[in-house]
Image 1: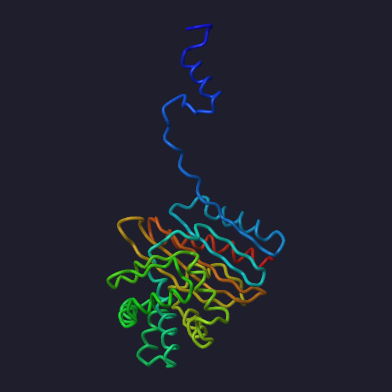
Image 2: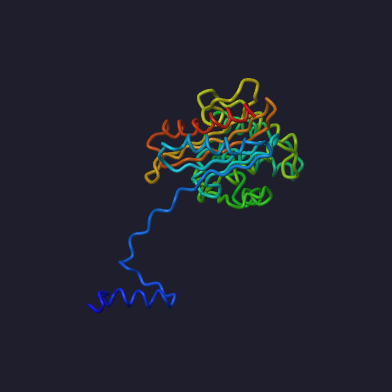
Length: 283
């Protein structure tokens, strides 16, 4: 010891004086990164803050990893959480399959055949997997990828070897697709958009959970859900929906994985949907 100051302390003081950082102790294990926060913007005063607070509260006690997207044209409101995180699509990709089929038919100026109509209806309204596999194979990877490119869905990666349910999707791209279905655009014809939304409005009652939960009366609902259990990340449970009425025109995507059961995932999605419908209805 010299003048009551240890050699280590003098070395540290000298190092600090030169701007060199000398750790006092061995590097500790870095703390886990903070969970991403819900972000919202809106042209309606107070609405963004309300949505951010309520969506955050709805998810506060939920386990699993949740991604959220909301866009309301009427109030120019957008909310996102983990917008670019990739999830196994499960049956949510069936909307993309139908959109691709219609986009391709439009290019050759033809209507869907009776067989295609039957398959499309079963795929969307009952989430029929065999019908989906038939259409996926008929379209082929090139057409599917070309549709994704035309739609600007650059974060979506089609599942390989016929495994359409393992297509990688994000909130960003699902919201892009829902916006294409609900407003005039150059990718899908008005008839094609109306056809997809009509089928999404005819989903069987046992599959109308998720984003429609808590929707106000008088608001039209178009929905497609997906659910899939795998050995990693437990249950994937997703819901995409389009809603119009009550002075609002909005689309919503909630993607989840890491759920212990399918019902747990559904409850998480519905907790988010409930506050979104409520906050928009009150605005």
